[in-house]
Image (tube, rainbow, N blue to C red):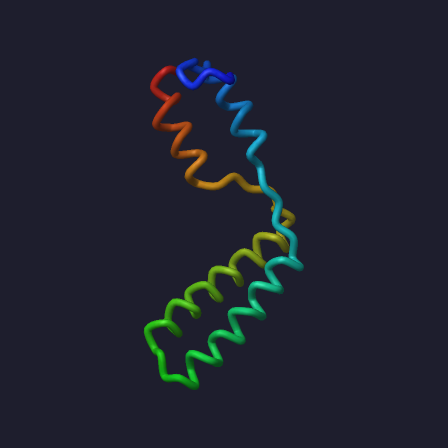
Amino acid sequence: MNNLNEELTPKEYFNKIKNLKNKMEKEEIDINYNNLLRMANVYHRAKQTSGLKKILFFLKSLEKEKKVLDAGINVFVYRKDIEEYIENVSDEV
């Protein structure tokens, strides 16, 4: 697997994807949420509505992530890793 031109079998690539799993903890979400709230206050005081809308989007996303964590799901794989698998390997399966 060290050779850049070496092709991986679907099984090898799938195992590679499994090693790319990430874990999210509630504490991390809480830290990000609180930081975004502070930023939202700054943007609100500065009347930067465009930036505030983006921050509100992120806050809503974090609220959804909290619900997922409450359901007991805390392991994930980034979308880009899955898309790479689909583009490079799925045709060979």
